[in-house]
Length: 97
Image (cartoon, rainbow, N blue to C red; front, side, top):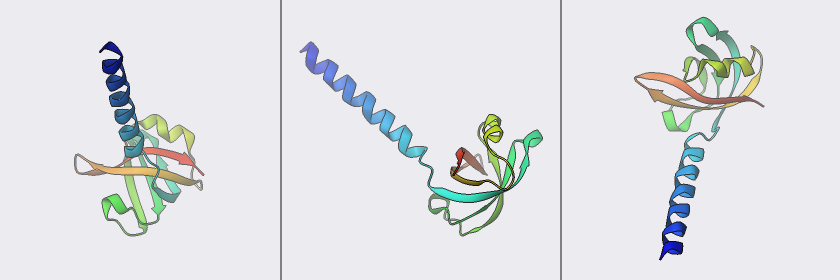
């Protein structure tokens, strides 16, 4: 019985981890146009973002964690994940290509 409970707990933990990883999937691509570190924002010229139903355009995004801005610079091509949080388009993960 203890083994079964341990197995169930392990499977549940893996399912939660997989769900979190899926939520953070870098599903959009773009080019960094401008970084506004003082306000925690980045301007991206991006392709379509399906989960936000946005067509390709240039848009200013808030970043969920301002330290993400340290890994990118203007002109970088990036992959990123974005969501609408508290009414604002927000980058939840980003990395240079």
